[in-house]
Image (tube, rainbow over all chains, first blue to last red; front, side, top):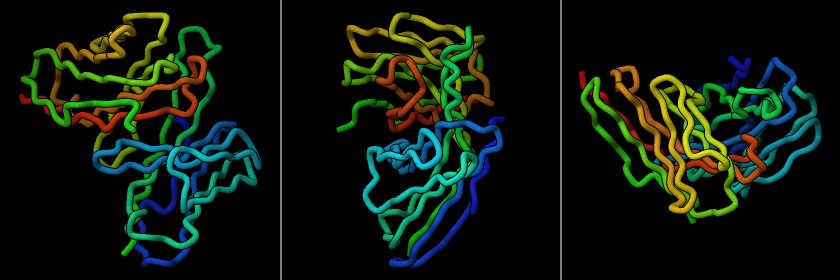
Length: 118
Length: 114
């Protein structure tokens, strides 16, 4: 358990409204990510962060922005939600464990947020 | 352009038998590969990984094989159990064998029949 929570877990909103999803982690990890999961596409990286105020775009960043003002929180904002942004959103952290002998470097995922844009 | 491909959307296997899940990739810069398991309404959980310097990695019932020349990897589960029923995602990274910035496949839904 990497101490990752996401809020809200479910949200229904209307086209054109702003939406912010929150990812919170309790273990001071530097690396955080936002993915969306859609049928036929697997998980696709939206944005990622290597630390406070250090963020960058992923594969499918159009229509999304992120902010990281504290190590523990990584916010994903849809400035004006569209129906194509209906999806399940996952936050993840990477502990950068590659230097630890025998421990694989991997990402740990939060429980997800199901967003429906009507 | 799907750089990581899982061409079988679903697989059904009898309990106790072997499950083989396949994954192909196109980006020759990928040097680290991972398998994740996902249950409904939960986030993906890490199963096993393999670096490109190896061709096999084993962890209990799970073994991952990597064929770099064919750009192909597979996950073997032996013996399969009903609790293994889930969606399995293959993922790859080109970030010097780290789990940074993963590219995922589309997933294979495994059903293990009792």
